[in-house]
Length: 95
Figure 1 (cartoon, rainbow, N blue to C red):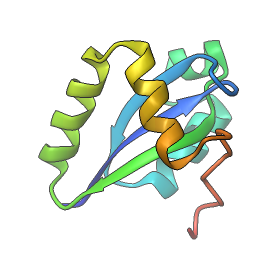
Figure 2 (figure 1 turned 30 degrees about the horizontal axis):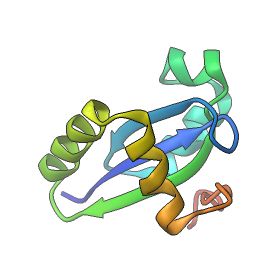
Figure 3 (figure 1 turned 180 degrees about the vertical axis):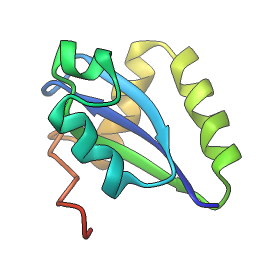
């Protein structure tokens, strides 16, 4: 089963949330509506700024665990390699 490790943020260089899912098209609307994670609704980290697809959900879970141990600056650098302006990457459920 495919999986995704992802990061959402409140704003550019703002609060960062790291998660994992097997369906970003389902998960992101949950974050945006305040469902599924108290952290995302409390801190407003609803902007998808980075994601990585894995062919196996177990690999995505391992990547999430690894990223959570990284220093904040490393996470920022990873995001800015592919999304320097921290634009919203999620374009809707049919993406």
